[in-house]
Length: 99
Length: 99
DNA sequence: TATTATTGTTTATTTTCTAAACTAAACTAT
DNA sequence: ATAGTTTAGTTTAGAAAATAAACAATAATA
Image 1 (cartoon, each protein chain N blue to C red):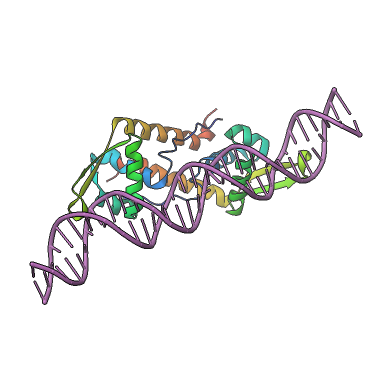
Image 2: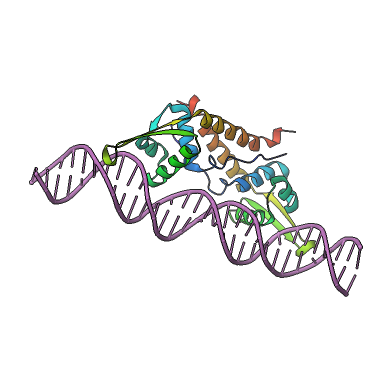
């Protein structure tokens, strides 16, 4: 039995929800993600930036204030990391069936 | 698409590893868990106490200092919570196949 | 019996998370 | 037109959590 470490960028509830959404969604904007994840603007803003800095998503921002629009899209590295995180977790859950 | 919240007690790397181990192991002592999870004593001690306080594991402590022995065992509530956490996460990962 | 090794806890620090406060702009009604 | 309101998003300050270093207690051993 062994436990691989979890990617600390992904092992956060909101960031994981964002990534799960983007993995199936092509893209999603700030407002949509806010509703989907039921998060506050502040928290969402911070976590989007963190995912962006990690290179897991690409963010395009336009305008400022009310007219602004922020669209997120998952990157190849992000997809890879998300799947790896999933695989790692799965291994935690199937210890009973492993040797 | 919807994202149920994750149990905050379980959504921590070390606590999750401990629970995953105990879910298949009947019981495990401090030293064994320390090796298995590759954690420091301090961190392990704190997280075991946290799981104990949540009622997810039962801990029996004997002696003090070097002679001491600490054994952990998962509770029914702990098993239930662990499986529920697992189910919730799974739902994040299979959004593509859900309606 | 003095030293060292082992088991675990306490504590202090750092990191991380989160929400409240804020900025900026676009509507809305007067 | 402009005062007030709503919307989009960021900053930042405080809380919470995680972690490791320091410690205490005892047992082994030299």
